[in-house]
Image (tube, rainbow, N blue to C red; front, side):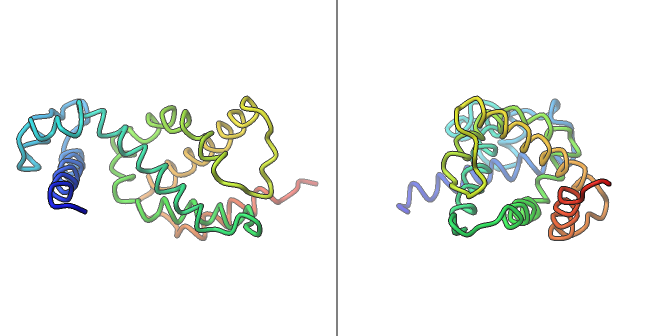
Length: 184
């Protein structure tokens, strides 16, 4: 990475770090661009190079989340991967990001981001080939992703809102066991 690009990336990272530092202390609605820039020890002009407003930080984080998750999925062998492995991967992925996710959950921002993430989710479905992917047309993919992601998102919200959440593998295994258990 070139010197200028490296400095720009570092400044953007400082803005995001400052956003979360302030979010621990105050409500999202109370945050201002000036406060975020001051916390990052950058000018408002620098803030605006990266984000048009504080909501753009959340939009960026949503996009980064999907990009990073897509990369994690690509590490799996699409021909042999099981549904169980993807569920475990998903919860581990969220666990690795739990510190910031818990801040968003405490400030009621996590569930509020679901529609934005859901709008982009069908692209993720198309880029990750899996043996159980059966949805054919765009409407079926959207329906499936809305159903799956909405459920996962709610589970993540409840799980990470707990004071002492169980490890991701335990949560994944409990969910998978519940999905496989048939009632008599």
